Length: 490
Image 1 (cartoon, rainbow, N blue to C red):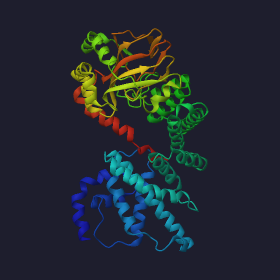
Image 2 (cartoon, rainbow, N blue to C red; image 1 turned 135 degrees about the vertical axis):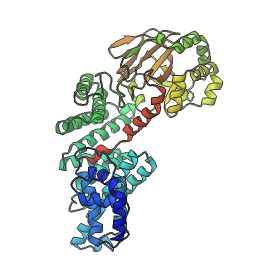
Image 3 (spheres, rainbow, N blue to C red; image 1 turned 90 degrees about the horizontal axis):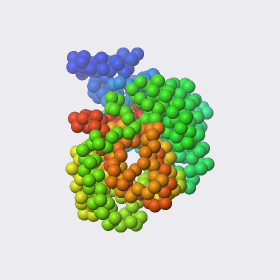
Image 4 (tube, one colour; image 1 turned 120 degrees about the vertical axis):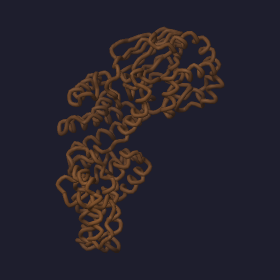
């Protein structure tokens, strides 16, 4: 009692914080305030040791919207309690019926709390610790799912286990679990997970398997997202994945319809049906095309294009120096041609080698503040490269990941029959001329010529993104990409 009295006086300022997320459990809010997430150094009954962690978890799972205040300290406390006081001893095969239930409930509570801890560690930017929590959660969740009878946490354990399997790259296993779980519990979150893992499977298929298997994967994703939307509409990131699935099926009308729903139900998330990035910052000028004359450095590039071309022609033309594009972008060509690149700044670039082989090109790029600062903030993304397309290539319509940068192409080798569409408008490249566009708008490329097309591709900060806002925007983008709080909702 003496310890509790000392704690009460210091905790009054924390009480309102705890009450906001514990809601109808005032005793739990009081315990959080008095202890600040740490266990009291007093004698506690075995019953309290087991019921408090379950109550903490149930309060989190009962929330109807993402929690506004992180319960990370309380979740970590609950895990320590469970770990210290398991309600069983001996081997599972020797358990009585009651002990089997107690073991299953403990395992479910521990696995779910470990997953929740991972989610809020991610929210706090502690990504390595979060991955450790997910790894700790996964085996417990897997045991819960296979247990008979099912525990009261079976539906939540299935949701959380799906995400852990996705993180570990076990996509087929995650899909199998997702479809099985959807048959038992037709919740919007489980349906969303069916859609998300189906998209990932479709995107990771090699180009030669992009006919029947990808159609099946993206079709399944569309059906799952539509069913989830009917149950609980208005989740912004679900619209991103849903629209992507339609576009991968060549169903642009379906993608536009999804985007219109997002614009209607999530004001400010998107503003145009043809601009569908996964990360969107409101307030920036939204225009598919920008005039190159607005950027003084573009005129310098045009004045130097012959020298840039000369440096390009001196490069080794072999496949080692010009790798094919990576990831999802590789599938955009659908086997119609080959899309290769020679990195200059960013992912895949040997910058010392690039500076040695293309000194003037690299010097110009580094002198452009919006380009060099983009490279500084996104060292693992492609900021500048030479892009090479073989004749016959058609890059299917797609949207870039963010509206915070623009893209410039300087035409180097441009045969007849090459064109690019951004939004509704088609344009042609010209040798020695720059074009500037916003690749967060839907765009596609057609190369109907008979020679290789090469452009210098440059990504740079959108001019409406002020330098003092860049760090904040990067943090926001990273948080959105990794956010998993939506998986806590039923």
